[in-house]
Image (cartoon, rainbow, N blue to C red; front, side):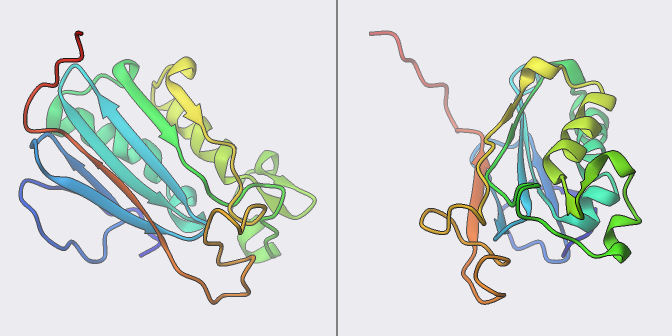
Length: 178
């Protein structure tokens, strides 16, 4: 939807007009689709909760990543310092040229040569929300630079497929002791 609506999910279903999903219910798979937008994966191993967010420029501007941290705290008691975050493949600042209408909505530090840095903006939001820097893992893979690996709306000229980001909690504890 390219917004900032985040829903708590307790049962399987389709949740239209939503850009973020959070749950602490085992067996529920959270899914968002992206083709250049930033997928953000949230994991709280202490409260056993997860979140998945689709952050395009509008969602990033509306601070969806920080809102996901806040919602996980409100619903599950998540401490931001306990969150582990993965920022998945998406369009990088190397390729994301924007017009003045979009650029004017962001602080100058996120615009370099008319290119918007969604990765840095979302990372800064997470840090400001209390997530520890060493708990944020950046894929640093640009979808537009690697059309052989990823779908990219920009690189394809607007006609492309979508990638699905999927995250959930297992129903039972796995034992990896050998």
